[in-house]
Image (cartoon, rainbow, N blue to C red; front, side, top):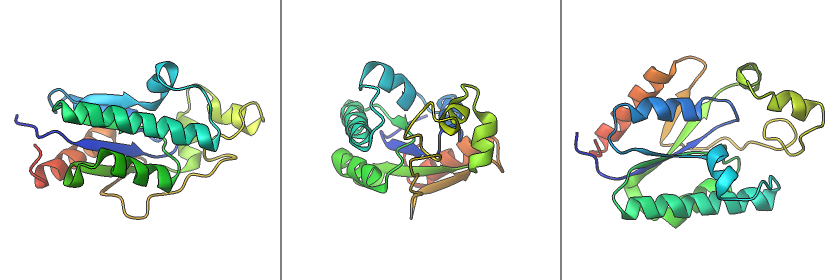
Length: 173
């Protein structure tokens, strides 16, 4: 399969299914790099979940995706990326025109809490985690995402299939 490098910026509440969908997409898209927010924060950014810390983390990840793009590597960024301004900033940093796609992985808060195997939502509700997106920090839904996925109504293979079809329709696969 011929692939023209692109960046797919996956955004959604914690535990909405972003990383699971990217893993499914990696099965069919050669050399697709996943930039997972949790993994990157472990090695690339401080564990600062303040607004300023999140802004900086998003900028760093966008620059990393830009480096991959410059080297011909398609990538999926899997970040909560809760603020519209962060996603707009990523689009500007990447400056790759129609090869940048914002993908909104929509999932209700109740379903995300059910899926939470790490217990983060419970800790946030108990006050043990402050500034947790969806609990005491906002998630700003995308106003006009390039792709919208409803991870409560479709499984990961279906979602990945819809993303693949979108990428094909743009001539990238």
